[in-house]
Length: 217
Length: 217
Image (cartoon, rainbow over all chains, first blue to last red; front, top):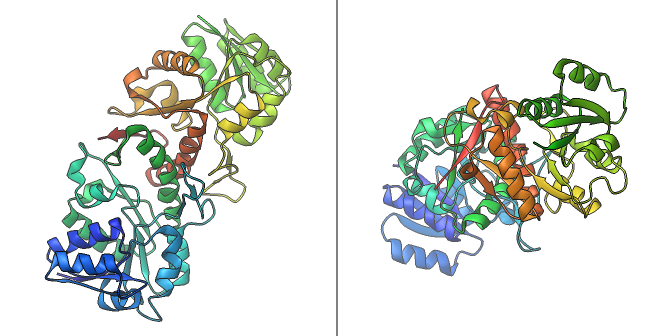
């Protein structure tokens, strides 16, 4: 069992945090404000192995960090973890830098020659950033069986051992290792984040986020 | 049988033009220069039902137009078709606005709040632009059986009757209608063009362009 710091108290953060608790891990849910109401409720409803704190508290607590903040708040959230709290730790980045300010469809605030995953890795060179899970809806993240067939997940990161640990964790979530496709270094976060611009149109078409794609050769 | 004007004499244009001729259609391959060498060779090798000309010649000849020019040359190519030559005609836009000038991975020259498909529709409001086939390799475009399984194709366009005709044509290429997903108006070209930023990383990973994705629910 591991200790996790989950940054972000929105639906994605709570979904991931609850799954990790269900799996027997200890989880601290981190937010900007230590008295965050959503985090308080989550702790009260979740019970044992669940706690809350600031971004810095959660990053200090966790052996593995999950960035589930909104894409536009992710750089600030990771900066708020404080010096050294991410050093040597795996940071699973599930966020997408989407801008919904102009309505549907959203835009990416960073794309083409950069990505959120790369930004976070650049700003925290001692963190071991692994982009993962950002291509599926939160329910599918923690329960891939909700979608039929041999659908795939795509990961990216510069640290191969960190990616192997993430593949193991994803296995606990229900993702067989054979269905996880390693796209290479963290630069490939550009690929999976750009994919989300396609995903949102599929979501609009299907009227549900409970779908995924399967690579066919 | 129909008359097609295929704009672009590169590998994609030639592949599509040859497939259309094989299916019994008449095809004029259009290029900037009426004496384009690739087009001359294609006509010589293809024989009956194959001809060549300028972009304007091909657009005038075809009842259906295929834009298979490079993404960065597409606006100029369609402008070169001359006034009225696209009016009322289906324009199947298979191009992607990729910029390879910085090497791999490429960037999109237009994205987020716009797309090449939308640009072409805006500049030629009387054309009936249908974005299609831009999410797969040219060999897969004309022979989807090269990839196993029930993989999908995604189309977008403002004119429902034009999309229905394109679905019929794609059926001739081997794409069952049930595997073609209509994402909506031409704005959804943003989705399928952004997807290509993901596709190129899969291509880099797999070492082949002969793959596709299947939507799973």
